[in-house]
Length: 358
Ligand code: UGA
Ligand code: MN
Image (cartoon, rainbow, N blue to C red; front, side, top):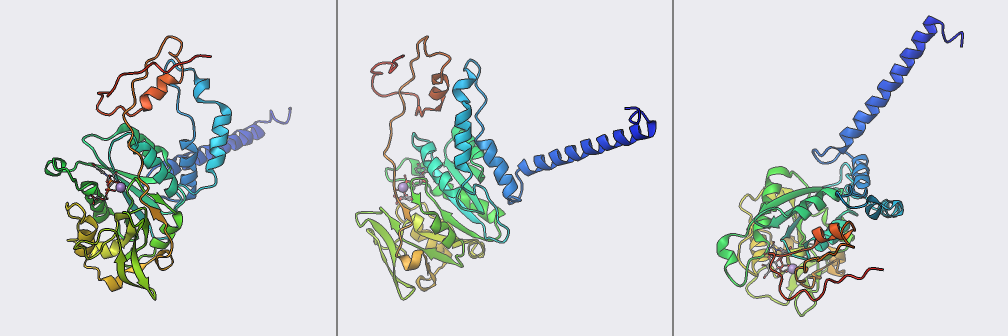
């Protein structure tokens, strides 16, 4: 003690403490930097940071008791499960994959985007362009994208009026075009792929399409009565197409059946997708000027089905949650905000309030 009181030593101690404090502050500053979004992600540290943030429980809305939303074991279990995948991981030197997903507001939208996002979480160097066909951004979509830990780009555009009026609409074209615009303005290399939100994907497909030099193609399951749409491949070359609707198409294939090299696309400034129902894929591939013999068959010479047009059953908007005094202050206060209500006019009568207390 007496020695500590020595003024010289005291100065030394204070100096030391200040140094430690400065070091601590510097580390914090670095961590903050890791959280920011910027140009193609700086590494796994950021991804981990985002992953951790996404699994933290949301703050309890006023009036709702926090334990209902934040049970410690829920947090522990969800975090443990997430550690296995590489969400948002960026590996230097690996070509980026631009995944363009057209989507639109409906009851199945968040479930569909959840399935797509959780597939992409297992694929490194992904930029997920979610392009919504809607008059205003769907808040649940924007929030969900921010939670995923993926590098996401949100776009919004509406199908032009004249196409909305017709019975057979060119679905997803305006929003795919908006995704292509993003690529023209921001991408330099890598590969892009149109991943509709109603498909299921095997992640091995993404690893193969990443190396596409011009245009690659592969089978798509659950398309037409034939059950599959695929290039016909002999001795490693595309020699034809197997598809339930050939028509006058030069490239009878599905939207999910091909990937395109970004540089190849950028070198073709006129390449675009037509608003022509049934001919969107064909029109786009024609506009690229690709020749059948140049197509790179993937999925082991098109012997594997790694993407399916799953489609999801259409669901009605949810009936209103009619609460009673026993349920106010419970999780129902929050759950009812998450339900798809459509345009607000519920069809059919509310049968009962659907509540039983124990
Ligand atoms: C496929 C093609 O993806 C469409 O481009 C094409 O118009 C259609 O076939 C056709 O040839 O008739 P399909 O599976 O039939 O589409 O339609 P959806 O799955 O309903 O829509 C395709 C994509 O566009 C989906 O990702 C969906 O979310 C989106 N979409 C759908 C919109 O953005 N707006 C809509 O109004 C409907
Ligand atoms: Mn579809």
